[in-house]
Length: 151
Ligand code: THU
View 1 (tube, rainbow, N blue to C red):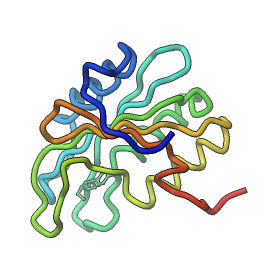
View 2: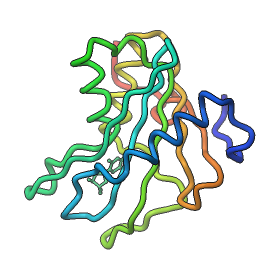
View 3: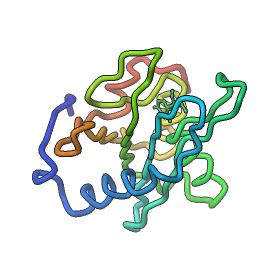
């Protein structure tokens, strides 16, 4: 699977629901420092969805990304091996960086997703919602993190 852009209308019902869940969790982001809200939604193999939002603190650098929060929480729920797909949505503007149309997972999140992919044996697809909300970019974790450090 090479990274592609798709309109929401081209997604399956499960994929659309996953993207909508990532958007719906945006108001729960705790981002008083960056004012940049990120939501992540995990699709489990039984069709259920598990969500996370970014969780900042005043140290700035120790803030937790939405993807990491969602996956750590899935782990606590005993569901890490059930993760089949991830969607990411964002809203707000960053002052210190250029933010593009699609918000891709940061390096640490890629490593964490790669760890889960290692556990499941699935090259987990990541759906990145465009800021305009009308289309996604889709890439698998091995495309986002080729030659990953790991087993
Ligand atoms: N952030 C995420 O939650 N996920 C990403 O993939 C990129 C960045 C968060 C971290 C921080 O709270 C805010 O976005 C600004 O960097």
